[in-house]
Amino acid sequence: MKRTLISELKENEEAKISGFLEKIRDTKYMVFAVLKDMSGTIQVSIDKEANKDLVAKLEGIIASSVASFTGKMVKSEYVKQGGREFIPTSLEILSSSASLPLDATANIDTRLDYRWLDLRSDKNNLMLLCQSALVDGMRKYLVNEKFTEIHTPKLIGAASESGSDVFEVKYFDRTAYLAQSPQFYKQMAIASGLEKIFEIAPAFRAENSNTNRHTTEFTSFDIEMAYIDSYLDVMDLEENILIAGLTNVKNLYGDAVKELFNVDIIIPTKPFPRIKLQDLYQELHKRYNYEIPEHDIGDMNAEAENLTGRFAKEVYGHEFIFVTDFAKTKRAFYHMRDNDIPQGYDLIWKGTEITTGAQREHRFDVLEKQAKEKGLGKDVEFYLQFFKYGCPPHGGFGLGIDRLNMLMLGLPSLKEEMFIFRGPNRLNP
Figure 1 (cartoon, rainbow, N blue to C red):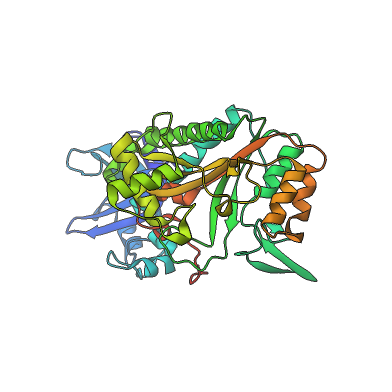
Figure 2 (tube, helix red, strand yellow):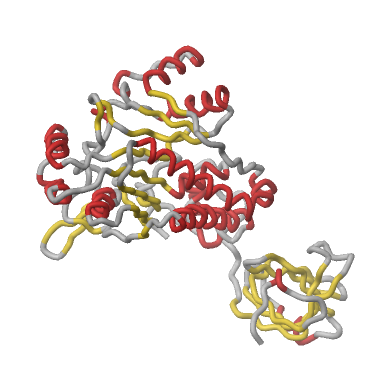
């Protein structure tokens, strides 16, 4: 018999259900088991006298084992599991479990050692469903806008962007590197005439950082588009895809998120607030007596981002805010400049930076000059070739999917949010 999901059971209709045994309770006359699959849970009620063979099969079986029951679902006002229970006629133990090495008091590092068990909770299941819905909403928006999805290489022959913070990999008789981002290849796609592209793929950063929002491997959602008039077009696109992604999550799981995470998914209104960096410095000083440290002048740091999120909420009633006019020394060489000001932005959400976006420099001579200014040589020679034979004006941005989901659900760190976390001290499971 084909398996039926618990949520799709129909009253008094014979069905087969399979899943994890969440609980098993043995009473004088009955054995009760709670079975869970991807769609929900149901109580399985076994009469001990009438089903001695089923009871015998459950002997020695503990919670977290995997089982299949055949029988019928019936309505019952006495059952807490949605007023439904399953009366089985047969049982098959698909996999028996040993005693679990985790309990509710386990710390995050112990939970990560047994991540596959930690993820079985309703909350963690919902967390990953929300991430999927967020990505799906954004992807569908881009596909409807005629963007093409591409897949760029993650093994590259030169250290990307700056030549630092990359992982080296032995590649036959030479050294390769794991890509920090698909930035160069995104722009190659624009030079190839694709015009509007995106990619959802892993990225790697060899940063020995142990903050709550950094990881050595993450999933990046990258977008690039041609024939823009300015970076304002890029900002407008980012507003639209974030609204699309958050709307999809709210429609599918908003109530469940409120119940399990105590978080309201707020759909932002357009346009998002915007402020120049120097004006922001003044506001942070005036309102919170905050002075940006000298080594961070021209840029942001974590404390400034946090206060910027507070400022956006207090002044604009908005969770998002764009910050523009960063110093050229703090931006990548491929950002276009106007009067020596990079034509780009950071987007802050709930006090955390989620994007650096920009109009790119597409003119070969200017790009070559800016690369030399940054001291970049052979590492970017292959990249500069993309612009020798004509390239449209273009811009784009990237989003860290895991960081987005973490902020959306109000989680304390990426360790909690990621399917499997990678950091300086963690390479397993």
